[in-house]
Image 1 (tube, rainbow, N blue to C red):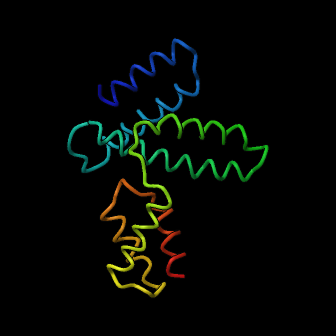
Image 2: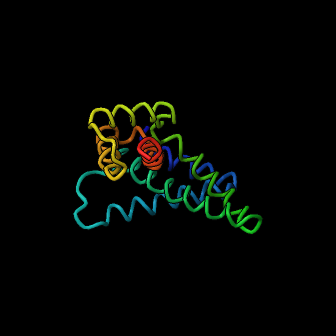
Length: 151
């Protein structure tokens, strides 16, 4: 079953159950997919790869927004909780990322491979890792670990 079909079935179930959070997140993803299809230069099919890309982008945005709501304290708690649900719910369609220890190993391997010891070249190391391991690592984590290793 494709992600599109899974989401359609989930939406029907959410409508029957009156699950507002699931309805909202599924509709948001469908809206984002429609926007992606309407982008100039979009070619190809609406397939699982497109859905995964849209979901990954959406989860990244919602995770960042959640952090901002968390910083608001009690005022933002309800929204932060909703965004946490969305990220967790959509996570099943995303590939699992390497943990911090495994990512750190990649960082040190890349630093050695590129013979980098200057913190000013951290972008080169990050770019190298992200190019070789796209979809396997969290970019923010890679960036932090490279800066720590070189700083």
